[in-house]
Length: 568
Image (cartoon, rainbow, N blue to C red; front, side, top):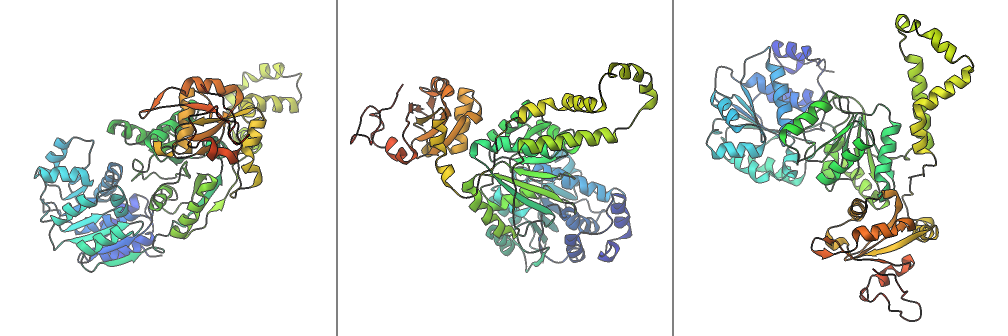
């Protein structure tokens, strides 16, 4: 393993980063730093998040900046304000004992007047998000013509977030003599296009294979029914006692809902999404970084640039629409050489998407079972026993009380004391998980799954028709959420959901049929009056049950093809 001195860095820089705890360079640092120190080469560097990319471009940049020149010599573009602030903090730590540089972060949600004031004092390095930088360019606050170095950090994320036009505008205003250093976790066509348009014969440095996932991450998936996603999440969290993780949801609404459910259920969690103010975002991130929060529930965009050490788990409540997003999500764990686990909670229909991701990141996923209620309880009991053995004894403080304690417990045997103590600590978990169902599902459809709707109804349930479907922008999860939120019922009482174009079917325990009817029938959803009917047809008749004669529910056809339906 090379040393930082062997890479060509000055003694001052090496001493500074050693004080920060850096002992040996990471692979991307070993490859990039000697090349970038030359200061005359465009570079494309491909490496996963969490592999030390900030130091890989930051240390050479600091060496190359002329501290006596107060003009802006370097521009670093980052996709999010969180990453922008993180890079600025790292740069300030690198330079504190080396050279006095004015490093100015420029991002939305903060005072633009204060940013302008600091820039006018002579910003030698500007670290910016594309949107706020465009604002400053329009105000003619920044002149990019003398920029010597441009760094595009997390280039693929910036493009995924829709910043291509802004990047084109920004780079077009810079000098042709500049060096461009592009760092990215993946190399999609759009990133390749930026490299070919704005870079001069760039050297390509690759750590691992292109688009390959971080080898320190174990990728797992668990297959459940749509309605059991949240129950599976709770079991994962309950089973992994020391979890410090990020949970990803697809939408801001889902993110807030999952976080609120976790908090209501007693978990130390909070949400991070785009509807929060900058002050709220900063408060949440401060709590998470200090580990005052155990679980952060986030959207893809809000979580960009999160650099928090020791994250043990990344959990995907929904797989992302873009495969590249999975790489960035899972990269929140296993940073700086540590190991981590990425768990996708999926339905049977999403197994094929797991196979696609495997091909792209060139890593095999491991199928895991959602822990059973008994397994969660056993893990929790053993943890209590471990804590009991390891608890430090404050002898002087408790000695005075022990005679009274012994007297109170004198009629109990050792076994009874242990049993009662365990029950005292653990009864709420036992109550919750008593008779808990198995949430795991087979990857492939089988007879028992096809018959699930029939057996559900046979056990005292109804099959309901609702005139909402895919054309209303709903999927099974959104329809389930709509039903449960509107009717104030638990997701556990909803069975199979069969989503169609303009209508859907769902199964419900018979005791809840009327309450769901009263809450949902007749309310307006996106301009449509919602209508519900009971239809106890078999699954094979679902197309006929919701077809062109849907409005004539009392009609019988062919002596049995159509069944009479109860209507409201």
